Image (cartoon, rainbow, N blue to C red; front, side, top):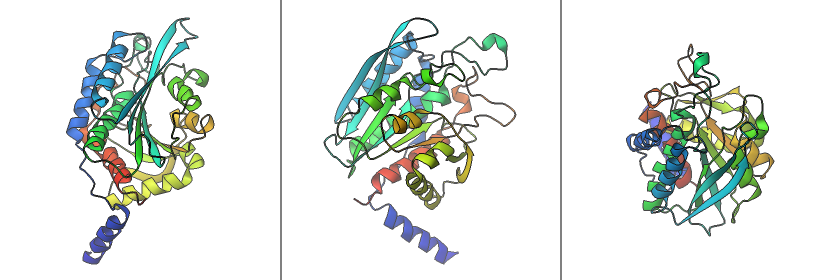
Length: 303
């Protein structure tokens, strides 16, 4: 056993060469709750405006450069025109060797998967589906500001991800579609998307589309998770998910991986796209699991 531990530590030192800061799951959970305090971040609502302001005010003092990509989106269901905004918090913005870490920040307009039909027209608070990924990015921003990475990193907050109705994919992923057609220079080597990663019972199998689009990156990330002892990461493919990473790859040509726990709930109960997607279903520990991997991935690259 002693020799195994020694080998593991030695391998870790080879892969994670830089000193890696410690991810604060408690602070990240505070970022999650703060977003939920604004209410649902549905485009066209006060919660959405407050959510955007919160993101911009959080990352602006930390990042080297902040880009706000604002664009108009015509909603086919309501006939309304919405202003959507992607936010890119850029660290080492002129460095050509760079990566994206992304999450969507809007929440769903309808709880269409709720078991109670009376709830299906209500908006979703989006503690896990939206706020969890943003919370991890906000915590990463604090570390990137304190300890400059050896590569360029863009933290990408995507808007308008969840505006489509079930089966109507062309009206989802509006922010990633706009970004994929308007990529700021320098272009990233790849993107890591984090979505629905706050579940108390976190399970992170390989997402199938990611394995098809970016198999080498999937292998690298899940190998790093194994070395770190993050048992929530599993090598099996449990589902194929249409998400922002597919658009970024197919439209923008950016190899992209989705770290996602799509089975959100207890097994008997699914909280995805229901009014039950609330902070009490999430945990600081789950946020820390994903954040720890990302910090090691950023600071452990040998360039």
